[in-house]
Image (cartoon, rainbow, N blue to C red; front, side, top):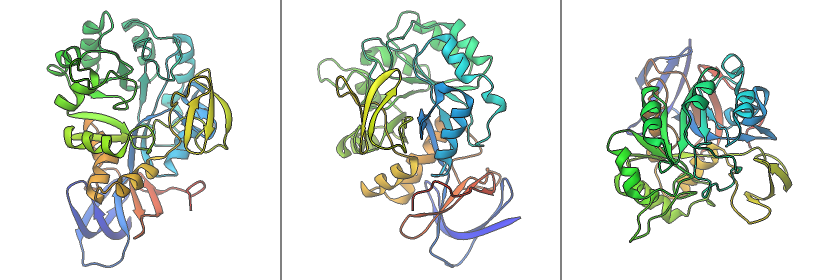
Length: 363
């Protein structure tokens, strides 16, 4: 039995206490103030393509490699994300992943496409297709799909969304040119989130409201990239005021952790310069090079308090994903938490009660 002390920070409550734990939290006691350590829930990243040269679409060895990188930066729950490709490529990438979760923090897969609008690809390859239950079933045979990004305006989407709901797959609208009316038709019936809010979606035009309008006016959940590049601080604050359960994601790609230069991403030529990645031919942003820890610090710098930062980096995502054992520091929940010093530097990370070896954590 392990035990740690500190200021315990959940999304709604902060107190000094001790945590006794094995792989799960067995007991939490209130204590008098005894040290300056902060204990927060492990980060949850439901949208992450890669890092340190590894990409989800390269297969399970790469998936484990990039998931370990993010674990060592505090992400104790991760959904490796695919990108739009053929059924054969997608199947080859995801085969064996169920039995090869060596990083220990993978809890399923996020399919970003291929059922997206070909006119709103962003950095995605031009391989989008119309909704296909057959395609999805082939993937479900080999991988635990937890969420999927789709464009609701595509032909055949009504029956497809109904099928997704029956399979308990989280539905996210993104890479879409849908009208607000098209979105709300489904939002009235299903629990809908939105993929990288603001990016690769029809906007908040005051006469022709689109996907963003539906999200801001009626949405309960949405993911947002808080890397200081994809979305301005003002837009983040508007989204936070409008969407009760807003949660942050990295949308990290394979060049995260690599030196500046030219690379291939999603079969496209890209340029990494500092914290910015763009398509070489048209300057379109192509994912991020942040970790969830970077995002946590960004949220604090934006003026959010620790409880709000925890809410946006852990508990809200857990709620959308129907995860009932992570996202909070709570008895009988998994012992997934991060110990920070008073300056918010990471001291220790615990995954299911085991201290994560610090190989790549930034000093």
